[in-house]
Every structure is written in structure tokens, then in C-alpha cells.
Amino acid sequence: MDDIKFEDAFQKLEHIVDDIEGGGLTLDQAIKKYQEGVALAGACRKKLDSAKSKIEVLIKSRSGKAGTEEFAVEDEGVSKKKAKKKNDEELY
Image (cartoon, rainbow, N blue to C red; front, side):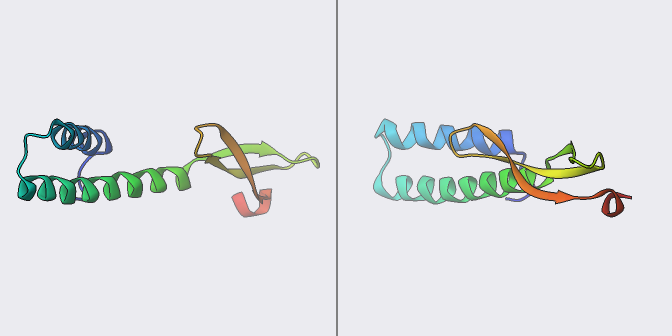
């Protein structure tokens, strides 16, 4: 499931939710859909976590040296910066 694109996994997950909420499935079908949904949700989370760890924002420290700062997204969808700074020497 690691090779699936995020957008495709998310779309499949939405269809699974619609199918389960629709109520027309047998118990066995609903359980299989649920299991597939859990796997897709895990794949989506893994891809999001990977993307989150790759995003960095360039910053300029008080001393004027360029550096990087990890960019994080809060659960509410509001972005903020973490205080994980690196100095010039580490970048080059």
C-alpha cells in the first residue's frame, strides 16, 4: 500500500466511508471495507508524516546567519514553526 499516491488512497477511503455509511453491505463486506479503510488511512498518515518532515523554511537568525527551521502543521490546520534551527556551517 506504500506505492499508492496520497490522493488515490484518500479518494478510495472516501468511497469506503460512503459504502459503509450507505448501509447496504453485509457484515462481512462491511468488515472487509473497514479493514481496507484502516490500511488506507495508515498509508495516508504515513505519507503526510513523511511530507511534514521534509518541509523546511529558511530563516535568518538574529546574528544574520542563514539557517533552516522545521515547518510543522498543527492539528487545526494552522501552521507554525518549530524551534529546530541549524546554523550556516551545518547547511554548507
